[in-house]
Length: 270
Image 1 (tube, rainbow, N blue to C red):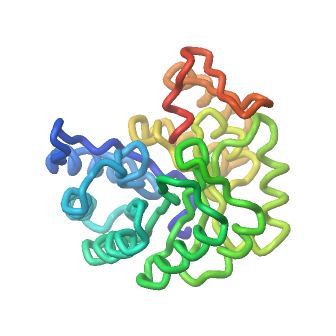
Image 2: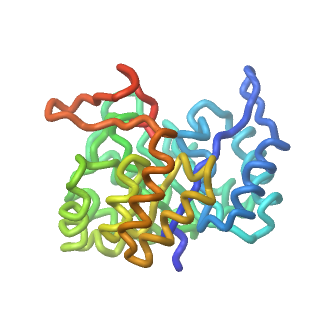
């Protein structure tokens, strides 16, 4: 199985009020996920507060996780940041520390163009041999990858996957068909958004990038295995077990998010 397939569990990054990461905490969390036999660990994603950590703290976090998993479980490390040269350095750091893959969002202060994002990804992919996953997270980055952009990036060496946001309920299979009808099929196509996990897995997505998988890896793994066996009944049963644990958000026609629990929902940003 390739790096970006199956369950990728995303843990938090425990840190104090000064942004100093608790390395013992990182090791406990990643060791637990590894022992739970997740397919990969997504370190320093949005759940892992990557955007708020210094380069030094990110390096320390990766080294701690590598030590904790001991090569048993692949580590995908987030390297998103404002500047391209800083992202290149973070990619080098992650590789040197022993990471197995990279995840990068197009972080910006002002709105980015499609060409700027293409050049950003190309420049980072060129400085590492590690496979890179495109982090498509428009609710946080305010950048939407066009279909043409994903086709173009699929042909860049070392870009190996895309982490897609949750589409409207009931639309995953249709979206997957469209993505796989062109050169984007070269990429492993995975989804975030735990509330559409069952639908995405049964539709045949390659990977599931899960926040709840970072907290409840055994249940998440059971859901993935049921989907691999095309057991819709078990997938539905496991989904119902943990449905109360997440906040169910739905994209509205206006592009806003409506949540059954509150007017704002961090689940939209994972």
